[in-house]
Length: 257
Ligand SMILES: Nc1ncnc2c1ncn2[C@@H]1O[C@H](COP(=O)(O)OP(=O)(O)OP(=O)(O)O)[C@@H](O)[C@H]1O
Ligand SMILES: [Mg+2]
Image (cartoon, rainbow, N blue to C red; front, top):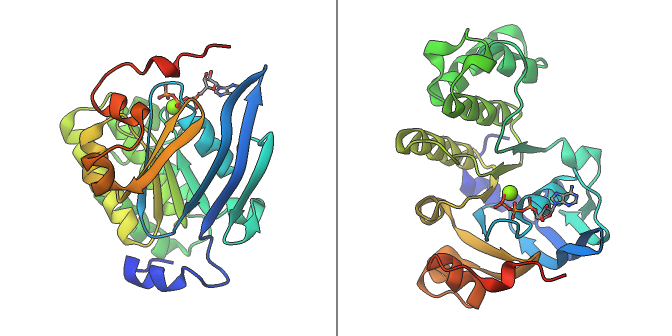
């Protein structure tokens, strides 16, 4: 792929694109609780979409459903008109809040994903990915000995190595210091510039303002609003989003059932 965003945009309505992503009537319930509740949403392939919402709102669940890690109770998910099958999944990558890395060195974690490339091209790409993730000096370190921030950057570099059409990121810089957070945001920008759709969950409102093109606000399993980021930060339409932005506890998020 590796196209600049403008070019990627021209692929938008094309036959092979994963976009638009069209979600309709999506639900996931467990033990009588509607954890994702009648969610409908359309996302294009160009923007960086940030999902905001209080703890327990269903943000991670929604991403897992969109990525096919969970089966919905009801509703449909269409990626560029296609159902979420193995071929679609192969073009997606996800980075979890607590990344799972191979018990090998940092560079071996990347080599593993790039096994299909000829050796010279693979080595060149590994060097590039490590440099962008600021991991060059620790390339031979066992991944499990890396710090939290380094592990997170390695997990993102590994997801990038697969050259996905869409990258899901679930709180990628939670508990990281400002410099590590900045490094991760730079990485996300670089991946987006390669034409990859970004879908990011964060509680860091500064990060949301810096990265978001559009904001999806989730509360109690429902999408309360989906707006361009500039509009959302200027004026939240829902009480739940206003309460969240103002740092007030939204009493409505407490599960009453
Ligand atoms: N696989 C699952 N099966 C059943 N219930 C689940 C599952 N995963 C999460 N839940 C429940 O669904 C609700 C929403 O969880 P989710 O992890 O999506 O919240 P979240 O919005 O990501 O919150 P946070 O900001 O704290 O990460 C929680 O009450 C959680 O216990
Ligand atoms: Mg979560």
